[in-house]
Length: 365
Image (cartoon, rainbow, N blue to C red; front, side, top):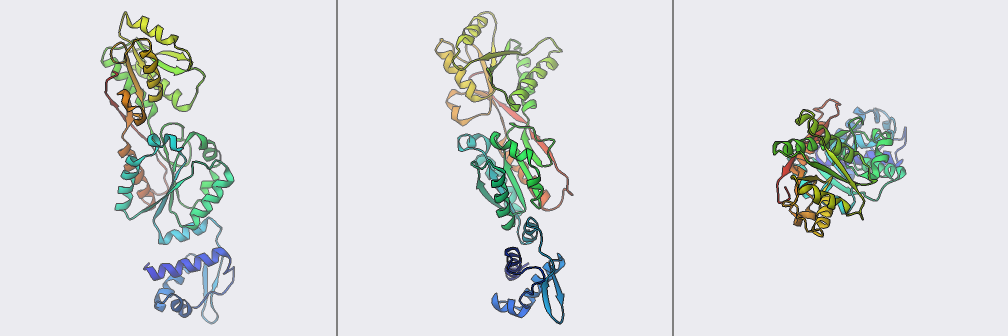
């Protein structure tokens, strides 16, 4: 469609959606429309023919053109998207964690792929939306804007709403994509998912430590804290040590409370006899361990080895040996997935892709 055709097409669709042109209502003639939009009659004719093709309008040569049917609300988005190629990023991630879960490195790589395909990207920060009724209103707005796809940046606080009410996205006319940093399990849900391989990353760490001859290894976790990603991380480490050593080595688990420093004394005692490696579930816990160890005259990388996960820029000053996915690769894979679905190359299939990470060696190991 050219610009004039799009304007007339959307004008008619918007007025049908708003109820100005109800079912069986007569719409303006081609001549009236062409005059209103300062264009030729052929452009008006083309726009009407498109809506006729979708069954929205019907022609009566003697009486004019009428609204044949008013589409269901979510169908308007599909009709509007005939003139658009638009994906909306719905970012649920709180600002405090956005530098880890959704940042410029991911966004830039994603935008480059979409821009090359002339796909427009719009962005909504909805970290404050947690109620089902708020989602419904938001989706209604996006449908009216003619979005072709949704890209949802997942977070702990909204996992329940998204997974427990998939019907709200079934009503969205086209594609739903999830980016998840490995905090939840999405593989059984009917969405296209790009996620971090939490289990596989942990196996990689176990393989690395065994290759270096370390087998006195402790996974350090805070008492009372449970989550999907923490279980997967521990499970991957345990599997990696058992597989890599033929069952001879195992993962030791060391739990501690936030105010408990006695675990460092235990580590100090063990480190006198053989090298000790601590694995922290993320960089935040690793930084906590380093600070507590320093108060007991222990230095990570010298008195004990320390590996963590996330490559969180907030803790860069600690020079942590850490595991991090390629953020640029995540952005590109998301872009490719959206491109294929918008271009109808995937034939209705959904995909769940896990991105492997890399071990970044710094001072602590």
